[in-house]
Every structure is written in C-alpha cells, then in structure tokens.
View (tube, rainbow, N blue to C red):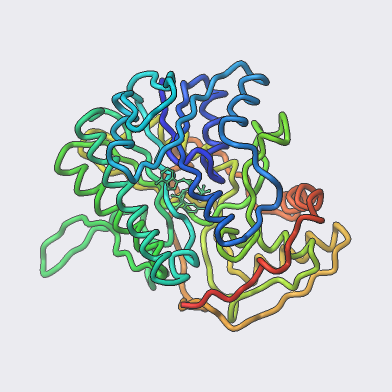
Length: 394
Ligand SMILES: NC(=O)c1ccc[n+]([C@@H]2O[C@H](COP(=O)([O-])OP(=O)(O)OC[C@H]3O[C@@H](n4cnc5c(N)ncnc54)[C@H](O)[C@@H]3O)[C@@H](O)[C@H]2O)c1
C-alpha cells in the first residue's frame, strides 16, 4: 500500500510518516516547510533544532531499512499538487526519483494550523485562507481527475463545531423540521478564522464526495499534546517539532514548558473553556485506523478524534501537580482573555467511532505529564520566555 502524507514535515506529519512506514507501507512525504519558515519569520523558537525532512528520512532509512520518499513543494500550487499523482514534477531541475505510483491513501495535514496566526492581522488571515482552501481544493480536483478511487483522510478540527449548548455528534445530525426528517452536517460555528477555513474544507470535501463519488474521512481532532512516539524513541533526531509559544504551541505543551521555565501558567479568563484532547500517539493510531477503513465511494465519514475532555483550569491544575512531583514550583495566572470565546459552557462531544475501530487510548495522567516534563527539561536552556505570551487578540 502506498500513502501520500501531505504536511509531512509538521508536528503530526513526520510521526505519521514513520508510523505508516514501520507498518510496511510505501510512504511519500510532502511539505513546503511553511511551518518552519513561519516560525522563523515570526521569531517563535522551537524547543530544539529540527533536522530537514530529507535528513530525517535518511536517518529513518539507516535505522530501519524503510524508505520514506520526500518531495518538497507547495501544494497550494495546482500543478505541484497534480504532479504528486502524475510524477511529472513542474519547475524541477534535479532528477526526480520520488514518484512511486498512485497512492491508495492520502493523509492531508498540509495547512496553516494556528488560530492566533490566522488573526495576527489581515496579511496572515489572507495567508491562512488562501493556503488552506487552495490546498484542499487542489487536492480534491487532483484526486477526482487522477486518482479517483483513493481514500482521502483529512484532518479537521473539533473547533469546527465551536461550543454549542447541545451534545456534539460525530459529524452528522438528524433534524426533524415541520414533520419532515433529513440528515445534515452538524452545525458548525468556529471561534477563529483558522477554524473557519477548516469548516470550509469540510464543505468543499462534502461537495466533492457527493458530486463525484470520492471517498473521504474527515477527522475532527482536538488539541494534540506530546512529543515522543514509539518510532521516535529509536533516535532523538527523529523526534517531531515542538512549539511552546502562543502562536503554534498547543495548550498542554505550552503549560508543561511554562512550568519548567518558572513562567506562571497562562489561563485565559475564567479557565472554564472545555475542549477534547488527544495524545500524539493516539493521533497516529486514529489516522491509521481511519486509513484502513475507507468509507464507500460517495460517503463523507466523520469521526471526532479526541479521547477525553478537560477545562483549561483542570489542565493547569494537573500540570501544577505533575510539575511539583518533578520539583518545580508552579503558579497559575488568570489573565484577561485575548480571545473571543465562552469561558463557561456546556460541552459534550461524542467520540466513540475511532474507539470502535480499535484505537487504544493513552489518557492524560500525572505520569504521562511527568514523562513529557522529563523530555522538555532536557532543553530547558533553550526555552525563550519572550515567546510564551505576546497577547494576540481577537
Ligand atoms: N496539532 C493539533 O493540535 C491539531 C489539532 C486539530 C487539528 N490539527 C490539524 O492537523 C493538521 C496538522 O497539524 P500540525 O499540528 O501537524 O501542524 P503543522 O503546521 O506542524 O503541520 C502542517 C504541515 O503542513 C505543511 N504545509 C502547510 N501548507 C502547505 C502547502 N501549501 N504545501 C505543502 N505543505 C504545506 C507545513 O509546512 C507543516 O509542516 C493541520 O491540518 C491541523 O489543522 C492539528
């Protein structure tokens, strides 16, 4: 089986590439280094230096004998996107041996993934909207025209649903209206521009699925935490990127780093914001199980990719407890919420689908936090306090 992983240099993309590779799949890893370049441009340091995608693929090959083909290119360019399915690389000056035939599965991670980035100002809003929607649209047409039986596994986000005052279903809801019934996409109301692009992605793919009989799985994922995966434990240079800044860091990764740096945990407002969370190891399982279980042609399958829910206050308290065990004195600071979001709300998302496919969850515990603390503290001297909170408002 051949899988194309789009966005393979990223936080989730590289661990996913190794995961499929160790399962015996042929893996083609595609990225344009958008994320690295954005971190450099905005001067938000990663916790440790990251080898290039090619260097990591080479190291993986030396350690395991499994080859991961690497293609560096911008999938927002239609011709580059289509070349992934034809092997005719536009603008290419070097001999290209990366094409290994059509994929059975395409994992689509290749987007600008940060809410604060999307709301920095009109320029970054434009980058987010154009990049994310062009990538998804190009991919949809490339699959329709060049690889129509492939299974497209797309990363969406739980943020598409927002925080409605009713239970959140897995993607679809049955509605009875004036005595008639139908099934619709669950209502979505994002609280950032980035999340709004993910809603639009879902709409694009639902259009493509019902119009051209594509096979799509859209995974509504919650914020991911963690660093190491079983594959990266072989060599620390295989470790995925780690951001702890306000723009690209996800909340648990940020809190752990703040605890180690002696920076009070930045709880926005009342801290009653609830979300669904997932360990990076479970992201890999979920994407893999989803890939193994394609929907019928013409069906858009949606799973809620979370394992448990927490409020920000609960996360801060858990971080405090775990860090205390490791000898850190941690304080919690409620600061004015720079975001426009409910700070106290009902939240009950359903998330049984991926468990039914056989995913075995790794839950967030003091022990799993301590494990992360042990890794992050090795790089303590690299932590830059100035990137932790700059107060990006919307
Ligand atoms: N990390 C999370 O907590 C989380 C939660 C929910 C959903 N997601 C979604 O999962 C996906 C992956 O997230 P991540 O945290 O790994 O983000 P990431 O930024 O680390 O990874 C995305 C990768 O895509 C690449 N990319 C972006 N635009 C591209 C383009 N035009 N052409 C080629 N490559 C491009 C980037 O360079 C980056 O390496 C995203 O779609 C994100 O919206 C992530």
